[in-house]
Length: 245
Length: 280
Picture 1 (tube, rainbow over the protein chains, first blue to last red):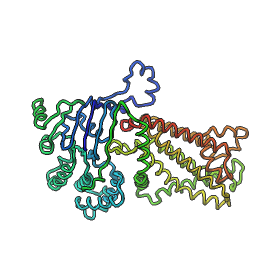
Picture 2 (cartoon, one colour; picture 1 turned 120 degrees about the horizontal axis):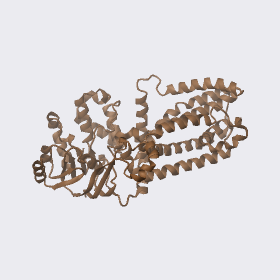
Picture 3 (cartoon, rainbow over the protein chains, first blue to last red; picture 1 turned 30 degrees about the vertical axis):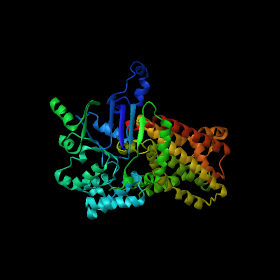
Picture 4 (cartoon, chains in turn cyan, red; picture 1 turned 90 degrees about the horizontal axis):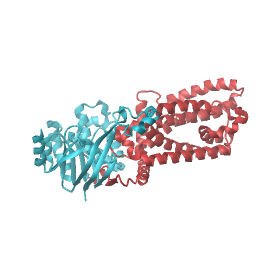
């Protein structure tokens, strides 16, 4: 039974790069550390989130840039560990956040499919099946056996899309890129996406695009500054956002 | 398309009030080791991409190590007043193993930061990244091993059956490498200054460790040698191959140092594993 449940979920994002990371500051600033325990720069990315997403729900995470949408998505995917609260995700998770992650530009399309198969922990036979399936959809022809460094942008997108969507998870986590691709590509991808979304028990998608929300989702969670401002049926949440804007 | 096994990850539960760090660290190692094929593939890709377009590829290292052996061999055998036949086997094993250790340690500092793009995008066991780093350096180091054989043949140095003791020596080096890749990888992700510090330490260690020179040149100070961890580890391979078996004290020291690095790496890994995604 697919389920996502967050109770008091908090995530602080430390910004070590800004200056508190260096060893010098850690050693030299020891006295300052006592007077100023929050010496490091921390951004509270998610604040005390409570929600429960059950089977059949198609949830849109909406909100301005920096609201915490992608951070929440990555937390759900298991990349970040929450600093407070608890999170339960039941069901096999498939995350489509950054499709290019783990691609090797010097390798051919086929080698990249094999590599992705290893990342997903597939057997060789499963990987071969994945390669056939991806080759059929991406329609790269001979280019499937050429390093992807040489691909045109469009070919790269087709391969990445075919590879990323060649799975059927129970819990589908997506960044908006997938649902808001350019029109010509979407026409071909449409059916495949619909099948992917339809086959998942739960979908969570982070997006700015209201038409994506209205088209694909039946529930919206509005985030701002890491807080949930609204959670409910799509129209109610979007109306609230339009009123605020 | 509808193959359920293609999904990335099964269910999970995290609770900040009950982090279960030990269990998660053990799962990480277990799952990471079971994904050794991924680590090995990535290691080969790293090597292929690093030497792309190069004619000799990693064999450039073999060539440069060979040239170094020749030059240093001629110079130091004269300085130390030793015959080449006596000095070269010592130098060949010492230098090849030292290069492997030193490259391994220096690369370990980037084992996690180098995989930032993957760590922040998908939940993969961190052990995979450490194994990738160790395998990459192991493969590169293996390109130098034929040099040892060549020098042994030229010098007519034929080690007896005790040479097999070098195998546990290599195992000790491998264990230390995995621990170092995890520990230094995490530490250097958090504190970016550690990397250069490690580089300097390794440079200093090259001169403090009997690589160019033989321990007996130290006279009565030789007894202090086991306090140098690099000496102890090096001796577990060099002893069996060159000296007809290493001194027992070096073996004891090497095993103690290995236990220490493993314990330190394990404690650090268990405690801070959950923070790595924020550090890289």
